[in-house]
Length: 142
Image 1 (tube, rainbow, N blue to C red):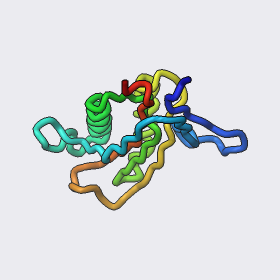
Image 2 (image 1 turned 135 degrees about the vertical axis):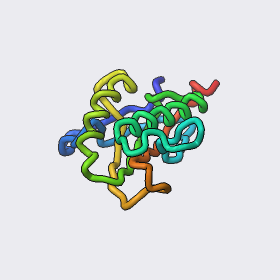
Image 3 (image 1 turned 45 degrees about the horizontal axis):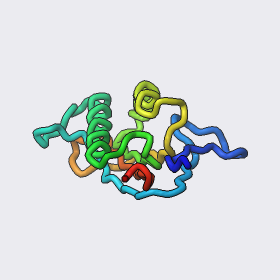
């Protein structure tokens, strides 16, 4: 029995407005709630200060490190929530996702994502934060 998360776009739902699905089905497994990842470099400083594309790369590298540390992968992601501080970066965010997500997820179906534009993040220099929910099947935890 395949218990990996399955991304769904139910009949009758409007077209997705980017690279995401409307829903995820999880049959069974252990849930993980990943804190929002920021563009934090290994030394604890802000990576890519003032450069949205560089921050995008660092944020997703940090997410990947957390996933790997938990024994998870991109296909275990159930949902993303993305926070940005400038609406002007939405188009660039969409282009960067189109460039990187097919490699992360090995296909053309992606987890649901809620995108929010906020006043600021924990430090003024951060332009992007992404949190995730993941699920690992009980079979894969053995």
